[in-house]
Image 1 (cartoon, rainbow, N blue to C red):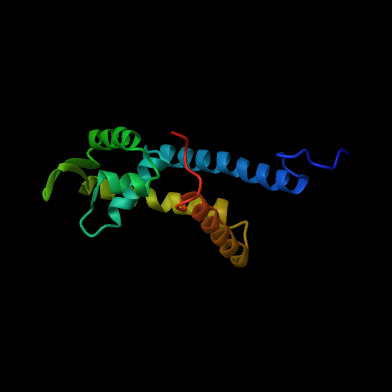
Image 2: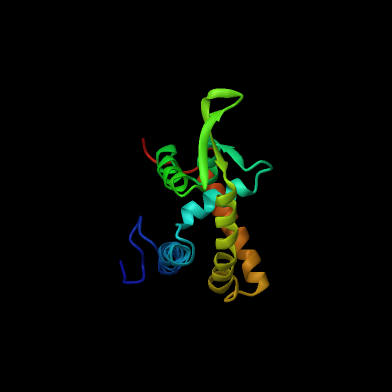
Length: 163
């Protein structure tokens, strides 16, 4: 094989360039978002996402299992984050009034205020890092590409973690 002929089961040069660029983005962007939110609001990007998801519901309430799905999180990780948010007075957990076996997360007024205070800085950073370098057409293509990749990961017969 020549230097330009890929070994079976390895990336060709174009794939490698695309993948390494995306992998770098997947490492750097979450770190930048976390750093800004920690500095400006005292919360992680994951915690912001929890508060954001709750703030978008009619009554600021979601079942923990549903919230874990939105956050792409295990219940264990979500529970640890919810405990941190509870200690800050931003969230409370309670039995579901309709089924006491189920736990719900409830956004408190303080939690709503914290999320609303954090949101402008977060939006500004996302605009700076993601949208400013792209044309509108490129941003739309990024959305479509990400949606296709997400659909492949979440598809019925798509990727899933090993047991």
